[in-house]
Structure formats: structure tokens, C-alpha cells
Length: 148
Image (tube, rainbow, N blue to C red; front, side, top):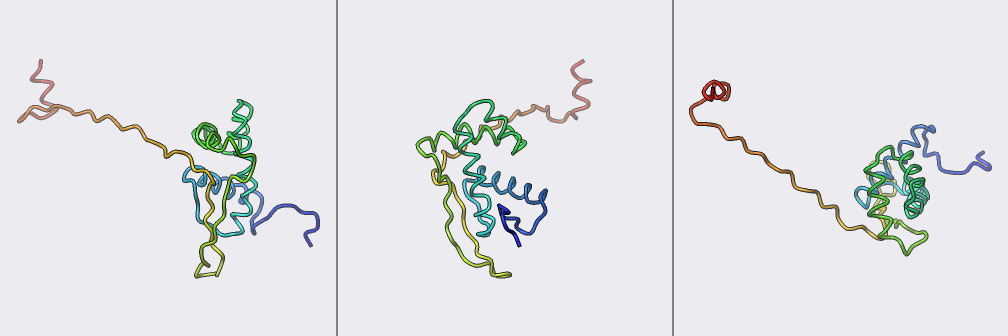
């Protein structure tokens, strides 16, 4: 009997469950939506709400708490600088669960979990391409000898 035991174990030990939650929450923050089972989505719903609520504070202490969970500063920066400002008028209910279909192999109910307010898409800076000029008919190693 599981009297007075809070949380869903999802058939995993503690370390595996923590890593699963971390990976699911990270994917949700990066992509804005994930496709997973209903049990997993319901299990991480509270974790995501707490992370976004903590990010809304925007303090250094809040950033440190988030960095301890994620282990990556770029994830913390995205959460605090992009997602939390998009949800500044909300105090809870940051995620939405939409039912999709049952998985073919084990008939598990699949859902799409998404952020209610999606932040602006991330624009990646373009990489600069450096072109090397090579003289025709001269090998690169021989080019140094010619210049002398």
C-alpha cells in the first residue's frame, strides 16, 4: 500500500526518475512542446510550473536554484529571459495537456504537453564564413616557400 506517499514513481528508482523529469522539462523548455504519455505529462506538470514560477522572480538566487536543477546556464537563461517574461501575467497554469491517441504497442495514452504562451522563436546568429585564397597551381605547403 502507498499510504501517504506523494508523487508518481513511474516504475523507476529515484535517480532514474529525477533524470527523466529533468530531460522532459528541458525538452519542453527548448521546444515549447513535447509528445509523451499522459502519466509522464501529469508527473512533470507540477515541476514545470514550479520552475517557471521560480524563473519569474528573476533574481540571482532563483537562477542558482534553476541551474542546480538543469545543470546548464543556457537553459536557465532561456527560461528566465524568454519564457518567464512571456507569462508575466500568469501565476500558475503554465502548461496545457492535449490528448492525442493511444500508442500502438502498449495502448498507452499519448498526449502533447505544451506551454500555454509560447515565447518568440529563438533567432540563431549566422556564422561568418572565412574564405581562404589559394594561388592556382601552387600547393598550400609550397605557397609559404614561394613567398620567401
